[in-house]
Image (cartoon, rainbow, N blue to C red; front, side):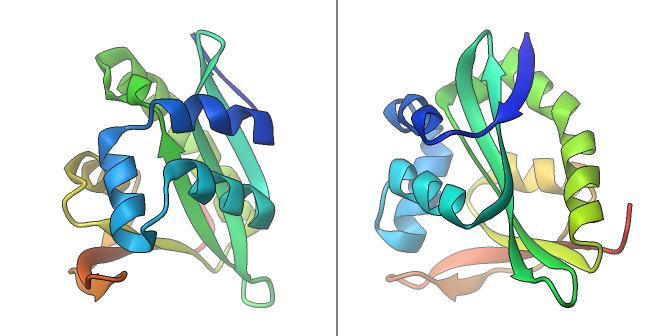
Length: 156
């Protein structure tokens, strides 16, 4: 059973204690920080943020932050726990994704965008499935690792 609730700082600890390995690696490659710090930063800047509770336990936090309110551009993000790497965890997130993306696109009708580690194959597949365009990798972060910009434009 999965449900969405407004994200709270208290939810961060559960995800940071057992992050998806690919998410932890992505955060490290980009910032040299950890998932907990990235989630706290995301919550501070978020226009909207939700926690996906899987059997009552925080499994992911997903949100959107304003990049440009004037032009309707938002930065969408998600970090999850290792519970998402299960078959049921993946299916649960897939079920929630269309409604969240539609909500975020209504808030930011110009564009939603961010970057994803080129090695995070599951995230890249998910983003393509969700309708995002994935661009080729560019060097980012302290070591110039390959990150792919992704975006979706216009109203849903």
